[in-house]
Length: 588
Image (cartoon, rainbow, N blue to C red; front, side, top):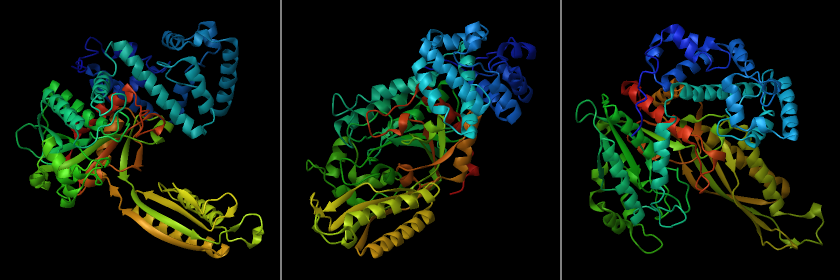
């Protein structure tokens, strides 16, 4: 059970006592605590999350000059003040904890060089929340960040100052750190054991391990005060009633099936984060003016059967009956597997929800990309899920002897394809939020001493803006024809896939961004390049998504990694969003 973070942290303090206690949270800058308290006298009775959010809001509102003064109040890492013993007690303990008082002479010299370069370039000292890092980690971050632009590094440094402030607040108040996040991470670890393989996570749709995971999920839902069930399509649904029974529900969910040899967080994170948020509401006996339903979808990955998103399509009322005839590689039919799992292929329609009973859908998910990590942000708000177009391109030339045909007389299909690939890349670089990828290329006949007479390659175009994607597609087709004409080649293009973008509801984007901001984080908005259950649920109701930073942007891989701090932040954002959710502000 999470600790009671609603505990009054400053009930014995007046305003002067508050400043005395919290004025040093931002290095030598009591003005931040003073501004936060002036804006909200209720901070005398606030928890760590509220204190931190108010103080970071005060910092963000302080203006560039005051923000620069706060940055300049920090000491150099392993610098002259440290050697002279002139750091604040907090800074001294933090630097010592990271081993900066035990630098080798070579490391100390390197720190001084970097300090000088950094100060000259940016005008303030290098700042990093050192807790949990060692001096080697810090040096690597230092060497990377000194290459940032001044604008980017200014924002990065402010973010680090805010993180240091949060850690200091936990230390001052004695409150347990990241309790919500730690509980969530523990459950994600336990959940990963439901796998077809002992040393890897593989949980395919409608398998025995999927059912075992569903049973555990229902047990956790029940513990969180929900009533749980498995619907006819195999989705796990937990309902937490509002302040009176039978109210329309806000859906929170993601998927609990995985790819083969998966990471622990794709899909599972969003479902268990939803359970964690509801569990905290239940622990505090909070009921909202709407119900909450947490859904663990199946078949988002589409690995076992040649269909996908059937669970979320069933809830949206767009399930295609043809999916029931699908067969896996072992010859087991979808309908048969669903019956064994505990669903009912003859009653799929009963899983569909009516628009009047569902207010909106929100999906928390790891980013599966590098943007949030690059910008040092724990969470981001999704604007939409990219539409996608895929093509197979066949280039024709003349196969001939590699040694006897002069360069100017060749009709080299592969050389032409290479120029076409660069044209695809160029168009991708021209668009905002447009990505263009050539993922496969083949030379024909593929012999070392034969000029390629043919080449085949693929194009994958994605964008949250269908018009931009279609315009880029048309421009690329023109580029391919131009290259072929100039080189005396033929080119044939086959479109193999086309899916429209799914836009997140502006009202949900705004409300999630406000929740992120209230939790003390800059609300970065970004599109999703990967597909999600939200695409299918959008046929039912307004959808929104919250991204959580993942290390190196890696996903669909055992190396998937998130931090307990980011897990905690994500649950706190969901909680804040739920407490402020306004269905009347949505349009669909």
